Image 1 (cartoon, helix red, strand yellow):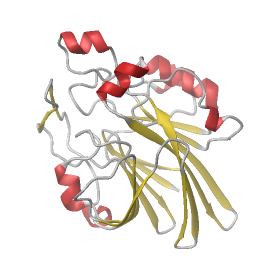
Image 2 (image 1 turned 180 degrees about the vertical axis):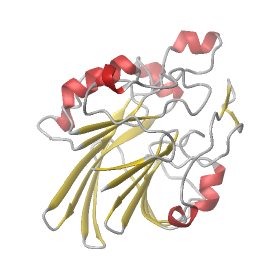
Image 3 (image 1 turned 120 degrees about the vertical axis):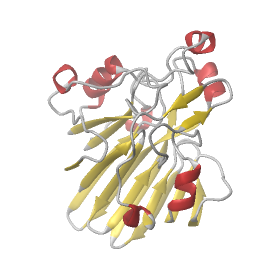
Image 4 (image 1 turned 60 degrees about the vertical axis):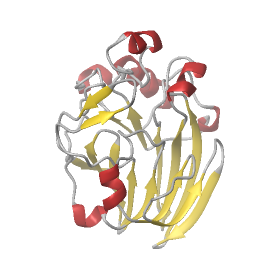
Length: 251
């Protein structure tokens, strides 16, 4: 299975000829995103194959902040199925499915059985403040094809506190963590709310709790409101894959 980090929270996954994209953000370097209370600039260009991303099988959107789904992606990406946490107009998809926490969607496409479960995510250290920042979800993805099975957990913009009850007893092949220690800008509001995504210490905790075969940090370095700009594999674990935008790995 091929995994490619596009930059930001955007991840491309491919099993045989079945393709998944999570949280596509395709704006170019130096783009300024306006979040009303603060602005953030993209620090590097996304790296992706435009022909592939124009027609994908499954699109996952954890929430609709600009650094998870932007107007560029809305105009470029076309998917057969899109899973979201709330209905959104203007998505170029054949089927849009809304999943709330604990809800599951099952489908078989291209001889691959797909089971996706929505996992609770809190966009901050405090649940009340996190919901004010924005409601979002993570995804537990199970893919089955012949004798091959893959289990992938995408955290969404969550701040880790303890093991999710839906994940107790589940072995995770790949844990994709939204990290970067993002804040709501660098002003007083950002300091008051604190970080709104995982930091390096959370990566270490997540790795110890879930014991995945591989852990992939994303959502770092790409935008100016991501406070952590890079990670060192040796400080998190031997199973950590630290990629640059455009790099891919096989699992």
